[in-house]
Amino acid sequence: MTHPRIIAFAFCAAALSACSVFVPSNPTATPIPSPTVTSSATPLPTVVPSATPLSCLTETGGLTRRALQTSKPEQEFLIYLPPCYDQKPEQRYPVLYLMHGLDYKDDQWVNLGAAVAADNLIHSAEVQPFIMVLPDDRYWNLPPGDGFGDRLLHEVIPFIDQNYRTLADRDHRALGGLSRGGGWAIHMALTHYELFATVGLHSPVIFNNDAAVLQRLVAAVPSGSWPRLWIDAGDRDGELGKIRAFEALLTAYEVPHVWGMYTGDHTDAYWHAHVTEYLHWYAEAFSDTGSPSPQAAATP
Image (cartoon, rainbow, N blue to C red):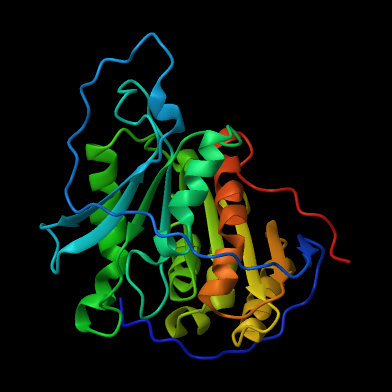
């Protein structure tokens, strides 16, 4: 795969009624929490579950940084294990892979509050517990950056499924990304749709290699194979024109998706304001795996 540099592109697409549009009110940013990240890997548990209520149900999930020494360079990632993961060795979990933006590392989503939001959603029983994996794409502007997608697909995902108690199938695997990570999510949704039942695109920036053939890639996805899709951006995002053009292309090909334009721009403050909403949407799919695609309403 050639190096995915980002350029602007434009194209025309007929607007059909295959998406829902919502314009939420102006969010109020809150201080970004800073969960503690440990640096040692935790072996798979052998704890026998207790017959009494588990105190871990009110505890926070665990964050660990790991590196795959089999890849060149070593592929690092953070992994979030939900509360009671160690105390329930019989339970298996769906997995959400979240990719960060340009000039960031694997902890961007943690700094935006993703681990705290997951804890809160799980504690409140609004969603079922799930695992989060946050792969590192720090080499984006160096030769090793070209292989990030292959490392994620062929090394990270198999490693997670082999070493953690995952539900290792498409219906229980979700992918999301913001900014450059959203560009990766678009690429993988169009070229590896068989691996992910849910894909989120948050302020995505489309790679030039994909932009040049975007319409052909969209047209090539079988109608019944599309993941459940979410796209959002701020109304002051510098990439908004290109994002809306891509959304219009999906509409033209009658691809079911959720489209949201909020007040905001292409910044951490914008993504932090919506991180709980993002995670809630991803986790909804894990609770309703019989409906991999959302029902899109008519565009106003």
